[in-house]
Image (cartoon, rainbow, N blue to C red; front, side):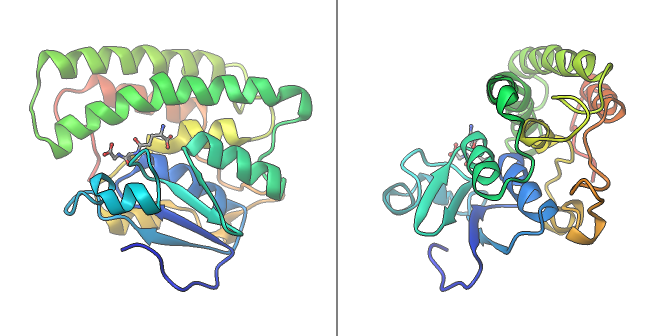
Length: 223
Ligand SMILES: N[C@@H](CCC(=O)N[C@@H](CS)C(=O)NCC(=O)O)C(=O)O
């Protein structure tokens, strides 16, 4: 499915299994913004690989893609930064901008990417354990340990308040192949607290949990 007539202020091309899509979906939901998902048929239909998707939606052939006031933004880190800039939610303090960027780049390069690839191989490609999955697990565990250590002395990545850096790292914390769970795992706006995030999912405890998940062999998704 491509364009749809919509009244929502923000549209997000996304799909349930995509933790990268979950990052901006979590932002939009926690901030209580007027948004709607536009389903990308990646799993069954390979939509991101079609010429039409690359021509009309994203030349990089990826989800998520945000549409806002005629502007298209792809790459979850760029989307989160854009959303923070235009809405003010989850924005790092001006002096922390590069610190946020540093963690978002680390997330994209090592934290999300190794884990997401490992998860894809085990749960979707069904490769079983191979030398490649073992390598990816090792790399992901190392990246998780970095974040765990950082979060052991503070509540959120940049200190006392959640920012887009936390939302980026949260992408695959609740990964699941079930679209029904996708709906459930995106906290409704009513759960927001005074700091705009209420029951926020990132915490050292959660990081420890996810690291422990990685230590298990076999499929790593919780059904
Ligand atoms: N660094 C990108 C990664 C995006 C990405 O890899 N998205 C996956 C879904 S989670 C995708 O669309 N893959 C399609 C493909 O590679 O063909 C981001 O953060 O947005």
